[in-house]
Length: 304
Image 1: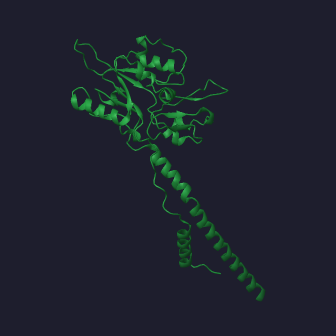
Image 2 (image 1 turned 90 degrees about the vertical axis):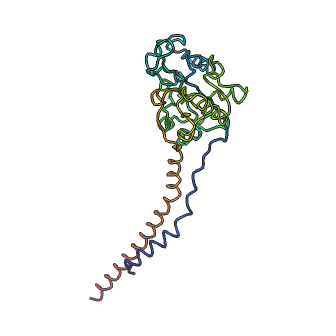
């Protein structure tokens, strides 16, 4: 049995055509249609840290290293960690207030509760999931401590209890899931804010509120609602009087990370068996070819 060059490519094409499945399914967003959200107006925030205090109390977190009324905490930039789900940082803007004094901006940060969360997509056990009420919820009983969520998060939010050797958990803002779901209340931080810098409501309505503020007072706000489009949209939205890059917010693409990663993953799982089948078939053909050639040579040797 002899396989010619033309026969090889004809067989390869036929095998590939027979092996290839239909087109991979297009990626579909898992974002809830109009979840609960929070709108943070940075121009209103006064850095009182009442939101930090409320978060600490609602989630039964340990006391902070720096008391909530100690302004020295603003001397260094902070990030949420396993003991602190939200922090407020101060940023110098170069602006002056009506008294000629420095007018800094204060920005609250926490888990953004993305519409299509990369952390949930990366979680191999389903410990993280996006809920209809807007929260990216963490189910501790499913967590195996792989920490893929920490790598995947574009905002670098999830923290891990490295000091807890027996029952470590991934820790982050819960969006006060129980308060919203069981009690019908707003998150603790939104409920306590004395200057109403945080507004709780449905995402679509809050987007309209944010855009209306910008339209009515363009001199006060930059023309951008942070979280409307970033990484596919988030449940936490922000308006600001200074460019977001100057107050610690990353410039991120509009496409949600799972749209890329899950598409690649699905393609691999859908098509990986096709080349395996193709090369397996070709390998079998080549084995038969070599066997036939060996037999012909053996016959020639016997006749000689």
